[in-house]
Length: 427
Image (cartoon, rainbow, N blue to C red):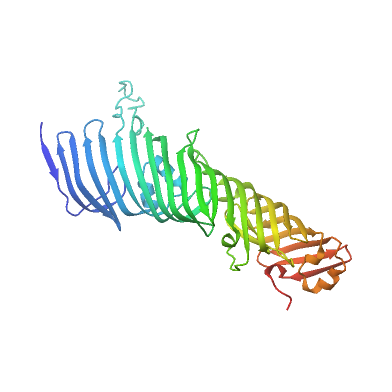
């Protein structure tokens, strides 16, 4: 039977079965001739978001569609995420995408599953197991090309990235409801990482070799005048939380900008590397190693990139600025263990070990210097002049924000100086 049906909604609200996401103010035209579908100028709204859809489809026992879909001012949140197929949810969850965005599917080709079997092996015997229904996703196929533009949005690549302004492009293939292939790229004009602004962040995005995750390779960005590079592997297993592992290197970053110093006389460059892995939502699972090298002048504090999650200034009571500082550390949950810290000035060498615990906000560190006259402890200055050629031991303990310093020379005397690390002058 030949027929032609034209639907022209004017202010229709719908919630499609295949995409349980409410659309309001639906307008446009749908034309059906036999088993052929034409969608022309279809628009709809969801809150402040605007959607536009066009394309064609073939109806019948196994429908297929070739569509173009675009949207503006869409919020990537629970409502949109829960309406997506499971494999798309995996991508959203894997990158921790959130925030407002615009997107455009230049290609969106869908083929429905094979018609479900109605009877298993023709067995209709009373008391039998009954019909065997095929997997709802068996035989389905979805191919798409997506350009997603974030505006002050966010994603997570092992390190949280906020205030993201840029584009993610994906070409993906889903078969039987599972991700069969994905390739794309990230091109971000600006974003915030640990309160620091990165520019020109780019990366290639591909499916991991084992098929259970995503890989961001050839990552590059500009941070504090330096160049950052690395790669990230994101794994989302069938059971358990998603995991990440990353390798990052930062070269020749400006110390004053990175550490947010306001003194224009402070000059220096920082180079650092980091290896980190863990499970999302579980800080205790975080494990990694890193190192930092700082060279310059007028530096009284050494900026430490602790997992690139934050930058902490380690301040020590030194009388003259150092021109070279280095640190090698490991990460165990929220605790940072320093294997070695070394600070050099023209007349002093200071070395130390210890740890910072960001869970308990406690610090425990020990330093030794071969030139006590280079130490800035007001009460002890006269005594230290007489111990110029002796070793001085410095114990740092207390909270990260209010540490205390205990000093001793040759074991003959010990004293405690409060708030030295915060720059008090003893007055």
